[in-house]
Length: 234
Ligand SMILES: *Cc1c(COP(=O)(O)O)cnc(C)c1O
Image (cartoon, rainbow, N blue to C red; front, side, top):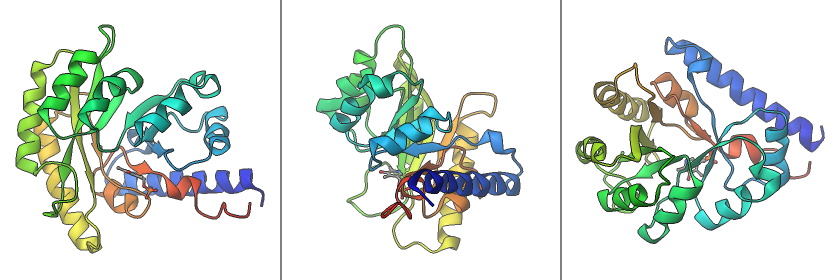
């Protein structure tokens, strides 16, 4: 298999797994949005998917690298929905408000204020509040209680639209623990973001996206499973 065939194979395996997990949770496959995490991907691989119309939502976690890539005309000519998924420093929030359509990792109100201030007047910046699913200090995100408060407070910012929650699975959690944590967050999400609205629960990465979608995620973030696996010698 050459590199392109392997990329296509990765893509089809991910889509098939997502569809099965969607049905298991009583949803249709098209209710799930694949967020392709392109932060480690080679330009040529990202372009391969874009040219075939296979990915639309893309995720980056470093601002400068994202700017260099997505402002390049080769990439900018594609209509993409750009998500910032990394930790957003306040001194980079103004630039992020210009480049991105979504900030999926918001966890403080000062950053929200800066984002609101620098979002162009014709644009609405979607934001997800990042919830921390572990007590470890090193992870970003807020406790569920504080995340729910912040989500409410975001209504004061006219250029921002709070659309849901994002979380990263705690390291070393068993599948059963993960399910329970994801399900708890799903219940809060359903209470805080009514089903009629544009709403996203972003749970699941390459290692745990099947469990996450089975538990209600509709925006899994998948990087290595699409771009890295089995591509070494291809
Ligand atoms: C890198 C990253 C991902 C993708 O991780 P993979 O395991 O490569 O799928 C998802 N979410 C966040 C927040 C990330 O930083």
